[in-house]
Image 1 (cartoon, helix red, strand yellow):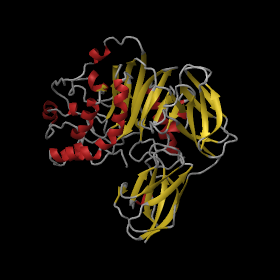
Image 2 (cartoon, rainbow, N blue to C red):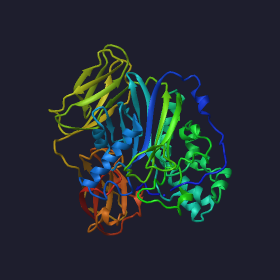
Image 3 (tube, rainbow, N blue to C red):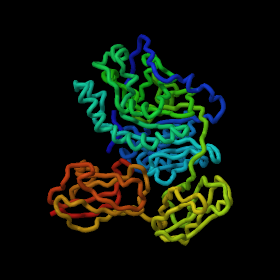
Image 4 (cartoon, rainbow, N blue to C red):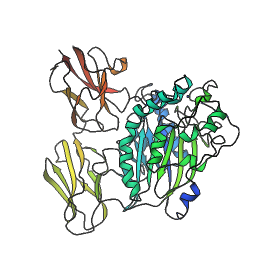
Length: 502
């Protein structure tokens, strides 16, 4: 669950040109199109976001520093990691031309359309009406960290096993969703803190020059390449030893020569399809690895910004909401790509019954608004209706009452040993990694007596169970417990519900 934690500086010497994709070859034939600056940014400084507490002067200064870094990078779209519930806030601080997508941990100058069925895995960056780029963003688990396993004497087989078990499962839904998009010719971008290096940075020649014990074909980077992606930084800087590109650790708040050997490049921008990288730069505090220096720097990672020339594609027919959580009284704003035909409409439904309908006016692309003042709080579906729209996935929006606070409840007060705990939640903020924490009755998530946990899937209103398929030591022994609803992979937790296991 907790994802980010890991350390810095460089060596250098010799040349080593690693084989693979050529930026020049990929760029051939792509002299037109749209130029995008894509940034990946783990914005947390270790405990940033809960160390000082929400609303503190230091936290506000950290937030302003994050915004300053994004501006210095001149980014168009930013995949954030560890925003700790601040995705919307960062977009607001960047200005009115920016959009926030908490389910994707992404902020962007362009709208992002999340199609029905994407489940927060990806969205379509709409660079022009009817023209899109697919965007993915992820943050893989931080522990066990492979390079530290190498440092501490683990054998290669064990290091690879940890990667296959601990990180590859998190990549499978991403790569499964990306492959058909790449095959269809959609430019596809993947940003993230992968907590795993590139195999191209750990070849025999490189590890000998760096004094590392042995080379590693890191499984995450291999899996991403096999899906059709190219590592944009390494395409443009193939000489690893001249361009180490270390992103972890940033040197914040201190710098250690002792750990320099196990600094690494774990924050990457990947591209596939008609997307030609033109330039890739490291953003961070002034250092030998930094191309765009920013002070103060508040993250324990450096960021990466890659400039790409993309050939946008036509999206599939879809309907998408600008915000999956709407406070009653503010409109439900919908974007669509639909057949250019009369009789096509977007319908707003509650429990299968239409409560509102708006015509697309035979437009292929557009934006519609549904007033929400008369809508009861709850989950609504939005879908295209009319000729040729039967197979277009619906999407959902949740309307919440003004001032409504997140709540969590359990189906019963008493459960048997080994019985799954049935949990309901309401009015959640809808962030990507909002989660449920089970603790002893007299503890809290901050006391680190976490017993079981699971994500809520970015659902504003939802229900689920906590049991043997979730994270922790199952079953819970007889005792008294609480389940907490917590914010976005952090330890700011709100409502809790008590239960007993007998």
